[in-house]
Length: 332
Image (cartoon, rainbow, N blue to C red; front, side, top):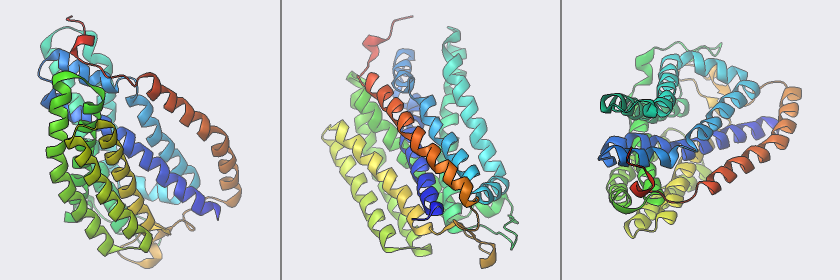
């Protein structure tokens, strides 16, 4: 297998891991005002992701770094053409991270309420915009023969992209609700499980519509199989949530997100950013890649350090695996 293909697969795996892990804590952040009826319940919700949310963001940093080093032309064109949406995602993530750190610094309800709003919007904005961004990557954008983006912001906000944003929003909300049902006890667990089933019904419709539309744009046999697998995994997860098998439900939503992302990457390859203007402007895994020597060095680095990072993050989830509830939160 060529190293360009290896690194395309690695970038796909990194984004898949990011959407699975950051997806549920985006969902928790968006559900904060819905499931958190008082301050103690909201603290329970935040504490479910408190030990892991910043580690989940490492997947995005690593994916961006891998893209920059392995496919510099892809990185440059993407980050210049998608500058405003990606800037909004960055600002939302910053506001969200600051909110997690500052919410508990003062006791006033108004202070906590403002940071709760920052957590909500800092989760909702990326949840939508990542779907919009990846829909545009898959469909293609106006690139000239020099691989320069020549469109505007409105060129990124067509119906297919907006459906992509709605799909990721629904998937992350459902994934987050299932995670909360898995990680909490008592009333929060009951309400989160019931909400996951309700959210999942609408999400399934949006996801099937988005993946079906995607396969009419470009497709492959592998992509069709993956898309069917994603739909079945989501339905299986919702069925498990309905009978309160939260572990299987979380597995189902996680696999559904993984297979949905894999569907897009499988159908996209060997392209990395198609041009809607001129085929000569399309970026592929070959013409966007770094030199073979650079890819070789990066491969050895990845072989050494990837298992270490995975082991550490797996250990973190194992240590903080227990359920929590309001009984674990002090009154003040």
